[in-house]
Length: 199
Length: 391
Image (tube, rainbow over all chains, first blue to last red):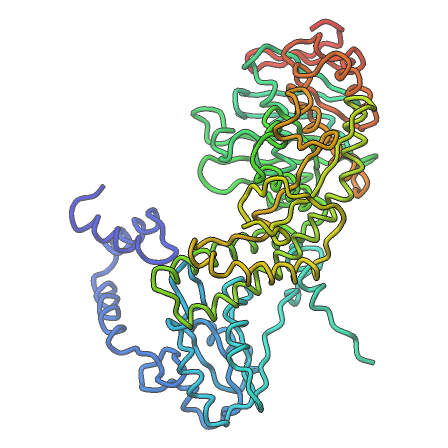
């Protein structure tokens, strides 16, 4: 245990995701040893980030404005919505540069153990966006784990309506990898999801 | 396959141990508490990534040491393979095959063993959970894909139970029930695959168990296995379904799924009251019958031992049939002391055809002559090899 404020700082860092007590200690001492203007900048950012950044009123993505840059972009297709769990999933899909539609960030996945039910997710907002019929396709891109799958099942039931195509991202082998290095579960899933070769 | 050399560093009570092993029977003799079981426990670890005695790896590392190393030279027919695992007190364990790093969970691909230890008596006398674990471990060895399904199923049960609990405390609300259906669907999908896999395994295992029991106990006894499936049960799905007749034969995933769905509907109200998932593979059992009577409760001590042993011998037979790397190594930890002279002799005959058998015993004379060819004496964490008859 360190004295007073140093220990408090370590404890606070330790509360962050992915940071254990040792890393927390290392970060705290790093801050004590660096130039003061660097830490001042960091402190400023921490204060303003909560004030400035909010969630897009349409899709729930992070933004500094009322709506995010994707929702404001007129070049993007208004007919397709890709549903993801977190804002960081939007960034991941954007990196592919393949998807030109809009997003909807749920803010998590259904998981009773973590106390998350459908009312805690932005599902009502999604239904509102679909009400006027502009959107004709919904792509469900929740994580390929149990909770993500459960959320996808729940959504697909809810979205069962005429004129709306609902699809789910495929799961299986990573591209560019070797088949021999795939684990049994992934490879097993890829077998289940195999498709006919067109000729 | 066989283990031709085992070496341990800072494992349990061994500071360092090196022991050469022969094909066929190998006997480890020593007084109680000298480290016989530790030796075979180390080999068991390589094939199951766990100990049959403790749930944490910490206990396997010698006191005041940071890590333990298990190293085994294996022979898959002509091919030699060196497998190593380092158990670390802090940080992740590390594994190597032929000096190149692999993930520890890939170790069982290179080495398989079947271990029979006194703890396995619980297979016959204990709770259904032990029997389910026995089946599931064997299933994963035969079909690794099932590891994911079993883990997912457990998680669905936990999620669903939590949901039932919160629905109970909040009063039944519409939206919560709609997510219950989502979990039901997953529960049924995963659960019915487990039911199919387990019933298929039981029906393949049954003739092997009967044969193995007969070979240990003699021809006048008949051992049989029956599935007791909670999704097919009509009593109120308590763990102990009394003497409802069990069932033999394979239940397909489709049949299991429709029975599962009906049971969930029937029990919906009870489940909401009690806030637990009352049916599914996590409530199933396999009933062991000896001469028509349930072994649990009717079998004598010696008979229970023989039955548990028969289950293990049957899994050796099943793994042999399916393997590409040769027989699993059979490990018999402290078995012979519990059997009468006739059963000892028959057991020795029954295991004679297995490529390699490792046996531990406190008393040399408890083990039949035929299994004593390679005897290793163990005393206070040290190993003395002598090819002499008498240890």
